[in-house]
Amino acid sequence: MTEIRQTGDQILSRKCRREYLSGTNSISLYIHIPFCLRKCRYCDFLSAPQPQADRERYVQALIREIRAQQECPAGTSADTVFFGGGTPSILSGEQIGSIMEAVRGTFDILPDAEISLEMNPGTADADRILAFKKAGINRLSIGVQSMHDEELRLLGRIHTVREAKEAFDAAREAGFDNINIDLMSALPGQSPESWEDSLRTAVEWKPEHISAYSLIIEPGTPFYDLYEAGKLAPLPDEETDRKMYHYTRSILARHGYARYEISNYALPGHQCRHNSGYWTGHPYLGLGAGAASYVNGTRFSNIADIKAYTDALGQPARTDVHALSQEDRMEEFMFLGLRMTAGVSAAVFEERFGRTLEEVYGNLLRRHMAQGLLEQTEEGFRLTEKGTDVSNYVMSDYLL
Image (cartoon, rainbow, N blue to C red):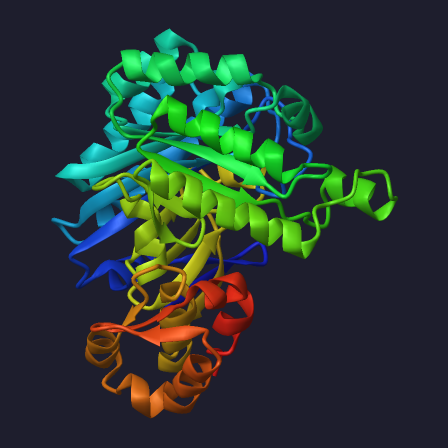
């Protein structure tokens, strides 16, 4: 593999880019927008407030990077596009439209492609949402997080529940018929009753998809500093956290939302295709500062420094270039695939790796089944309800 070193980082040559994408029938595109109006207190993602002029320079650098991907083999198609952040909805409809124009000019976007954009209710009015729709966005993921204003203030969110509902209604008025809302449980001082109320309010809105995550307090965040200093309200204990998780599944199921991944629920036909690709090993190309890629068994990332990325004129240095071994790929097949309620397929495992699940993991599979953590299906194996409760423990066992 040819590599060029630049300022201590690795940058992929043109030859490398072609090798990574050759033989790939379709890929998913992830586009990172690393801006927000104000950093949330729990957030450890690559994002920060930036002046409007800096955002525009970043957008132009991003467009240059997208167009540089014309070195991909002719006919490379994209089945999903996902604008993540940060807060992609901080950009104007015109900026999102310019990015999408570059994407369409570079990749063959499939006619039924899922094109998602994460939206903070505090950054989007009706005109902006309509502009996103006209730019080609067909799925919105709205970061509601809580249906209680006091919890939103605790999290450092910039919107209220009323503003979130207004943004949701504006999205419906603009013609969006595929909307996700994010909700967050296990917050400091949160009770099961408060969480249950958020869930019940959410289903009254009737989104097509609900992502329900437990808070994780990450080092380097304001929440972590407050937690270490003993200045946060107590977090729900493990038993309460599990109770909230079971509330989630039962309440959403009664309203037609099936859990298809540990933290994700959808009405029929509305599973997030982009995220499902991550869990099933579908190749994806990351564009923008800090964006990660996985193509043809190789992982690599863009540099995370926003200014350095913007100054790179569409040729960002790559970091962490790593060709996965077969052992690496088998591990990922298991610990990512087991996140899905469908579990892992024995036939797909054998087709992909030339070995059977029994050969590689037989003893471990039998042990987990004996412990009631896994069950066998017609296709392969999946977590039981008990196994889902201790999923991190179960999935870590599949690291060879």
